[in-house]
Amino acid sequence: MSTDNLSTDNLVTLTSDPAEVHPLAPYKTLEPEELKNRIEKIRGQLGDKLLILGHHYQQDEVIAHSDLRGDSYQLSQMAADSASCETIVFCGVHFMAETADILANRPEKLRERDGRRVAVILPDMAAGCSMADMAAIAQVEAAWQDMSEVIDTKRVIPVTYINSAASLKAFCGKHGGIVCTSSNARAVIEWAFERGDRVFFFPDQHLGRNTALPMGIEESEMPVWDPYEMDLGGNTEEAIEASRVILWKGHCSVHQMFRAEHVEAFRKRDPEIKILVHPECPREVNDLADVSGSTGKIIRTVEASPPGTKWAIGTELHLVNRLKSEHPEQEIHFLSPVICMCATMYRIDLPHLCWSLENLIDGAVVNRIEVDEETSRWSLIALERMLSIR
Image (cartoon, rainbow, N blue to C red):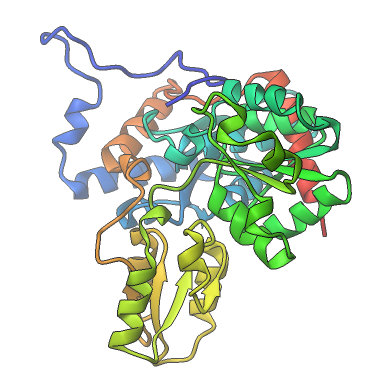
C-alpha cells in the first residue's frame, strides 16, 4: 500500500522480537460478544463526537456498529457535514479515509471549528485498494509527459475515479481535471469534453469504457495505457493521435472476476432472472446486463423491485448477501460461482475497530490519515469541480 500523503506516525508494525507482543494480539483472542460490548461502550461515551463510517462492502459485524452506511464519497460528505464530530473512524480503505480527511478539514470547515481538525482513523493501515494502487502518481506523471510528446496535453482533461489516491486527485486539480464516481461518470466525461479534445481516464479502464461507449465513442478511440510498457503505454503514436478517451490499465479485482459465461449460465437456468451489475465489470458482462449502475443504484434497484423479482448481481459479495438478507421477498443470487470479496476491506474487523476506539478513548489517535495541505488543496479543487456538475 502506498502511504504517500499519509501520516504513519502511529502505524502499528509487527516486531521481529518474539518477546514483544503486538498491540492488537490481545484483541484477536476476545470473543465477538465482548468486542461488540466494548465497542458500544465507547460509542456511548463519545456520543456524537464520534462517527463510525461503514462502506457498503464491509462485513455485517462491522456495519452493525456504524453510524452511517454508504459508498465512499457519500460517507465522506455526510461526515464532513457533521457539526459535532471530532473523530471519524472509517471502516473502508485508505483512499476513502483520505477523501474524508480532505472534505472534513477543508478551509471553510476549519474556520467553522476555529482551526480544530477532525481526526480520521483507518482501523487497519493495510486496508488498501488494489485498483487505486494500480495507478501511482509517478506513473501518471510519466504517462502525461510521454503523451505530451505526441498530443497537446493542454487539450487533454484528466479524470480520476474517486477510487484513487489523493495524489491523483491533486494531479487532476492541477491539470484542469476532475474526479468522478460510478454514478456521475458520464456527466463528468461530458464536462471534460466541453473543455478539451480528449479525456485521460484512470485508474479503472472498465468504468471509463462502459461509460464512454454509450456516448458514441468507439472502442478503437479508447487506447489502453499500460504503465509498464515503455513506449506510449504500449500504443502507437497513431493510436494516441486518434484517441478520444485514453484509458489506464487498471481494474477492480472483485468486479474483474465476473464473466459473460456467468450471465449466460444464469439465463439458461432461469430465463426470468435479471442481471444487475456494477460498471466496474468488464465490457462483455456490462453489455449483457439488464441493469448496470453504481453501488447506490444497485441498492435502489433492488429496493424498488416488487416481490418475486429474481436477480443475479455482479458486485461485492458482502453487499449481495446483505441485500439477500434484507429482501427475502426477492430471489437474489451472487453472479459468479467463484467467491470474490474485497479482501482489503475485509481487513477491517471487530478486533481492529475495538483496538482503535479504545486507544482513542485513552487519548491516543492510532492509524491517523492526514493528507498534506498542498495535496488536499488541489484534490479539493478537483472534487469541487465534480460537485459543480448538475
